[in-house]
Image (tube, rainbow, N blue to C red; front, side):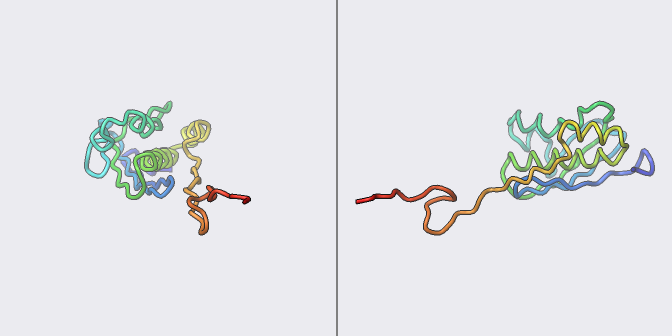
Length: 134
């Protein structure tokens, strides 16, 4: 729980190999900044990623916040998922009603799927070299 309405909320979100450090400032104008760039510039018109990132802020009773994010690692999909996870975790600290709404929509669940490693003796993680009986 945040102590005051003026407290800055911090949270960390993760997805694949991406890590996002999210800072929510209350009583903002709704600006979202990712690595010192506006969100639409950072994701260069990837509308699916932009809507994915902003979806926790559109939840019922979320309020208006300025969001500042530092994200490292992974690609655009992993970074968008990490930012979404971080924003949801920060919003969940506000009150239990909002936390339940985030939980129902699946924003607080950490997606733990990772790329499977390549094995020796195989061209890829699961693909096998062609087998010839004769």
